[in-house]
Amino acid sequence: MKRVFRRKIYGKMLTWKSESSGRTALLIEGARRVGKSTIVEEFAKNEYKSYILIDFNRASKDVKSIFDDLMDIDRLFIFLQATYHVNLHKRNSVIIFDEVQNCPKARQAIKYLVADGRYDYIETGSLISIRKNTESITIPSEEERVQMNPMDFEEFRWAMGDEVSIDIYRQMLEKGMEVGPSLRSAMRDLRLYMLVGGMPQAVNEMLDTNNLQMVDKVKRNIINLYNDDLLKVDSSGVVSRMFLSIPSQLSRNASKYSFSSAVGRISENKMAEAMQCLEESKVANVAYNVKEPSVGMGLTKDNGCFKIYTADTGLFVTLAFWDKDFTENIIYQKLLSDKLSANLGYVYENLVAQMLVASGNNIYYHTWAKDEKHSYEVDFLISRGSKVCPIEVKSSGYKTHASLDAFCNKYSDRIGERYLIYTKDYAKDGATTLLPVFMTPLI
Image 1 (cartoon, one colour):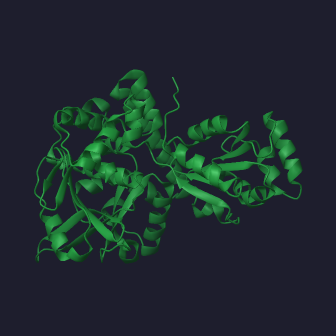
Image 2 (cartoon, rainbow, N blue to C red; image 1 turned 135 degrees about the horizontal axis):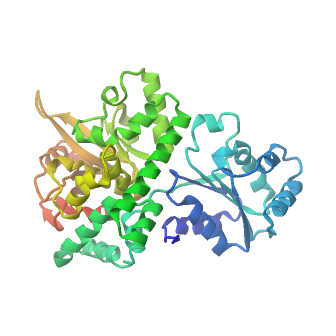
Image 3 (spheres, rainbow, N blue to C red; image 1 turned 60 degrees about the vertical axis):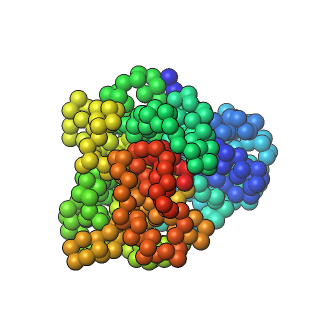
């Protein structure tokens, strides 16, 4: 059974439609299989009198070639209506360019179509900013870009039929209340999210079968799809190996991603190109080390020192045991029974990265020398107003936060709220707020 899940991006699309009034096109970027096409078509059905969806993965040569010549826009509209058997209505119809990166001329045409003003336009794209897809065209300035991520924890709970829990946790956090007896069930819900992830296909399979082995198969298919995509845009295989190595790199518990151990020795230019490709693919989230933590952290980021996380923790779990069958995959049993060993704590780190990005944050981290042999590290830094909020992540109930304290002492003039994210209940420890992991999106 195919379901259309409730997604937060729908509200952003409504805002665009209302405020733009046809003056811009909406470009929804994101990795494949995050649900872009589904939610866009649902939006078109609900908010317009009619729509045409052009899937450029399947569109004929005739359809693609119509965008080569825009001298007669009337002819283009007549052709599309005849081909797709849809009547378009002035200011009450939308034309969807699905996977628009596969027809660069259609994306370039947005400038003239928007200027014409008769209809609205929504584009979706994966790997859309990769240079090879856009090097021969003029990127239209009439685009508003919105990033679509895998389903976040709240959207996952909505899919599971739970419409109220996250709102209740939000109220608890605002009042500084403990979750109390609900903590156990909340953490169980979170562990299920960690296993299934936020890819709509995987969530749909979970609802259909309630079988994690079947969900794992869906996730493996998605990972294979991503790997194939990455090999298409980088035939050297460097970007593919970077993606597949994410769990092993995080398990090293090192202060940065090691190119040499993941892909071998490559030039700095190739490394920069591979990083750009991986980031633009939207299948991974990158946290850069900042040399000078401040509100403008992007200004002092170290482009050669970073950590990479998968954009979806459900895929991360499957990727971590890629070479094993589901029945051998102990992480499923360990997570479900809340017996995740300390050396698998990087799963929580990936989850927190995903949650912070889904909430609209750019993520950074900071390391500095403790002594000649040891270093301090703050897992994540995010900006709030004119302040920096440091975040330390633990996969247990331990309340120690030496690195967090050292960081706040070192940069006391710029610290906002400080957080320790862990597996126990809400608490305060001096100036530090201790948060259960499922409250991360509420920061």
